[in-house]
Amino acid sequence: MIPYGRQSINNKDIEAVLAVLQSDFLTQGPAVEQFEQAVASYVGAKYAVAVGNATQALHIACLAAGLTDADVLWTTPNTFVASANCARYVGAQVDFVDICQKTYNLSVSELKKKLSRAEVLPKVVIPVHFAGQACAMQELAELAKQYNFKVIEDASHAIGGEYLTGKVGNCQFSDMTVFSFHPVKIITTAEGGMVTTNSKELYEKLKLYRSHGITRDAELLLDKEVGPWYYEQQLLGFNYRMTDMQAALGFSQLQRVDAFVAKRRELVARYNELLQELPLNRPYQTPEANSAWHLYVICLQLEKLSKTKKQIFEELRAAGINVNLHYIPVHTQPYYQALGFKWGDFPKSESYYQAAITLPLYYDLSYEQQNEVIEVLKKILR
Ligand SMILES: *Cc1c(COP(=O)(O)O)cnc(C)c1O
Image (tube, rainbow, N blue to C red):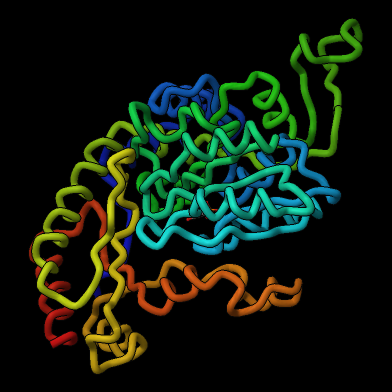
């Protein structure tokens, strides 16, 4: 079976985790700060806060942005449910902005239209860098200024990617950026997530929300002269901490992020070349972005095919190619339908969903395995 994605772990990764296991701190030790500083410096942001996964990162980013149950958050339907659920965690309403048919990212022209007609403006917008390709952040940032909303980039797919002259995560056009380190993503800590920001104020809030709302930082304490045992809980936070084992793995993985992305780009170039005669759309790339290529998604030209997408998907799985689908439009999930959304609300995300298939793409995918994927696909589509 060839999976659609998987981690690549080497001996250095294993040694890094073992070293933590034999050290004084399994959690709240030095490895977390080391990983945070390394990610901040790699992406070009001032601050980074590590947490247990990207879902937690999105949750505390919403809290730090001041999102409450009186507010609305907008995101794309073409994402993992976590990008919308984070609003629900704080009691906020969710609404969606349909996708661009070329990039499959949140469409900034749709966003502009929706903002100009909105009765209630969003407090936060979460663009998702689908498959690793950055959204049109510059245009989005202009709208953020005009309509006064905060921007949290969901870059779960995109560490190592670039937008204009900078790395994704530098927050040049946003307030915060969230990364995921789940094993199928570009680098992994097993479970893990990170928020980057250039705002000291947001950084301090994120740290409070991560750890029970508690601080020991002398600068932040309201009562400064109590004693060396003293700490203060200043708001209601959580235990969303990353362990030192995870952080050490992440730090070690980060040393290979450019190699990971370079190999993905090579495999993508091969797919693009070898699939060009088939009745399918290969992924479009905007000149502004340089994708990290978390996913390679094809869209079947179903009008040219005698099989349904379901048949094709099942035949690929039966042949040992574990293709996947990113994403079922979030607004069509039963939970969101119960909130009032329905099929037909975001037609571009829905027609994309009818045609899309995610092919295997990961660092250790060999050319032979990739050729097998291509041959099987050719046979099924012929
Ligand atoms: C993977 C993913 C998440 C959630 O990440 P976890 O680390 O598993 O919580 C959120 N958003 C997107 C777009 C993702 O792909």
